[in-house]
Length: 353
Length: 127
Ligand SMILES: [Zn+2]
Image (cartoon, rainbow over all chains, first blue to last red; front, top):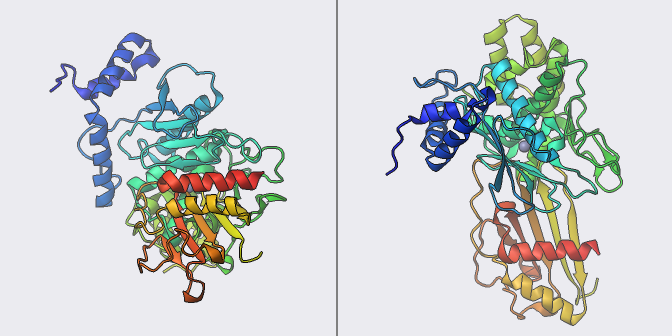
């Protein structure tokens, strides 16, 4: 069995020290960490145990690493994961636009989690952030595989590369946050809530990065992914679901804006990317009614609900109740925040229960 | 569409974009029909549905539907007589038994003959 003279936590610290000019030591420490990864596994387990206990803020006695640690891999247009390591934390830009967009996007998402919500990475315990780019050939998607974000280059006709949108990068990482917290089942209404929370965080990453208020924000998810041949602004509009695109080839954006338009389907895990339009709009309406920076109040309320006592099979009504309760807990029973959240759910036709 | 026409439709849902493209082919010339049918027959229609990955999100899901020519019964394509009904595949009601098959295949299970079938339908429908 291999034994380390330097304890793993210290290796992890040295591995990230290259920002301070200790490049050689950092590289050596990183190699050593790669050869012996138990530290990472322990972090994952700690995150899961925390989530299962439902106390996301009460972390274990071990010190939480609040620094970002990113690693970007290149799948070389194959479907093999993770691919070849191409950029590690603190390394200079690679010159490959997808690699560097993924790196920057992970950093922006980590910054939102830490600075707006006091959360150290996806698991709340400093989990290293992993992404693979150039996945597959003409691959029209980005996904979360349970451990890492994966991005395709797009087909070049409808979609360009999927790293081009910061909201999509935030969306994928937020699936990790949900996995470590509420664990919303990816099916039907709980699946649509899982999707919607990823859109909420994706929008907030962009707004936080641009220091943009709720009024000034576009509330679009995935702007910039379509090629110029497509008649459309983005994949989705949180404020006006169903209006993001209307194209000869793609058809019209199928998202419903309220419960009257709820889509019953067996496709897409029960329409999780369709019905997410309903809670998406509730969030955008609440955030705009409250005003200011959306991450400060509406975002905090949604984050509190996801990291609180929410059931993994929560439906829209249950999530409306959870967000209203977290608005009360944080801002007081008669606060404008509570009024705005309750009114937003009413507008989209969801009655809290 | 006459009785000798084979039709295969592949519809994709899911993915972060939530866009649902579909591809389909028809074939009525015998060598072409046979070639498609042998590929169709090699797919694990009766295999148990693969476990969904509990922790993944935004993966594609493929719906694959085959409308068989009448004459195809007994050409090696399973006629559904074994009575097995796995959760991922289903058969048409009695009257149309063996004329229609469909299955829902998550991207993570799209390997081997499933992958070959989907890729071939996509390529052929693009032409
Ligand atoms: Zn998603």
